[in-house]
Length: 449
Ligand code: PLP
Image 1 (cartoon, protein in one colour):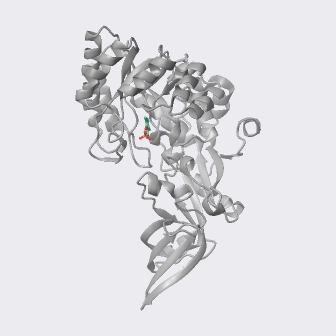
Image 2 (spheres, protein in one colour; image 1 turned 180 degrees about the horizontal axis):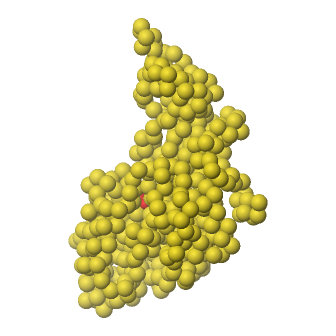
Image 3 (cartoon, protein in one colour; image 1 turned 60 degrees about the vertical axis):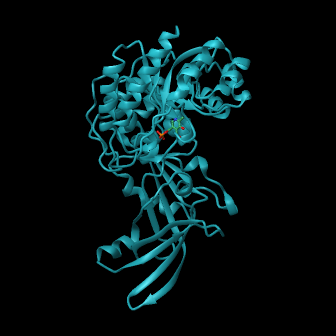
């Protein structure tokens, strides 16, 4: 198929009437003894479309760090999203895909000089800052850069707090803007990041209100800021929704930034990719470590662990949950007993613990477990410690997402319309075939930051 050979080096499986779960067994068989990451492209396309429906004024600039899988980036580029890059390698990567530099924000407040120079060379003009030393660096190598002040406004309840490292505190804002002015630099807007995996949608309202104050201060200094960047933090797992987040953001924009002359962007990472990736792992070995009456305690060793796809346990406070599939699931249906089970990764290190304790039916060597929501902050921070490779990545796409063909033939924005506006059911992306007639993305792919 044209689509397959032209764009997806990793190969592509098109799902017709089957769901992702229906084809899991094929991947289990083909995977031999390596783990498998199933990337459901339809899920990601649906997320982008849902974003546009819920927050039409906020343009998503995908946070590349979250999952820079080449297909993720290519499909998003074709859908017309922008990108948040944090280093020269990320910026180069996105520009090499043919993305106009106006669709990229260099969203790192701490930048090596050579990376700032690379941004200038690539034509990526917009970048964030939150400290004075950064301003002197920018002055010396890219004095015309468009500067966005990242302010601090933390959610109390989030998976990863970022404010402890980034974001100007209220008392730092005025002196920073004064330095921008004294150095003759170009101030264009305000950004924030409330924390990754934010569980307090209302915090965006407060952060946008604070951004308004900074806009007013900048106006009084003679600047005309035009960019508001509401950062990341949106949930992306199955069963989560951005509706509440959209409610607070849309309301705050209406109150504090009613005019369309302020461009509003966001830097979602987790939201875009988390649920699109499911991991399949198999049991390489097992040990029975305790036996008292019927109460055995089991230890299982998988073909993937915290040095691999489960590194988010260490780096991202993830708490993955296994789903029993295959034979063990059939057994479970027969009401067989569950045993306290501990799950380990494949390396020689005992830090490589995936699950401390979970009640599971007895698993046999060669049986498989499924792990949902494995798309965010998993693949990029993986290692091959001990010589264990990462998972094999397999691309699947539900038939109804065959608009991909359009997407990749440069008709992406119009093609989004062909994807049903309904939420995916479960993880299956099993959308009804109702084409929408609304044009959801503007024709012009440039963002004019
Ligand atoms: N923007 C910046 C500057 C970040 O540091 C991050 C995550 O660390 C993101 C965006 C993406 O955040 P999330 O995945 O929570 O949407």
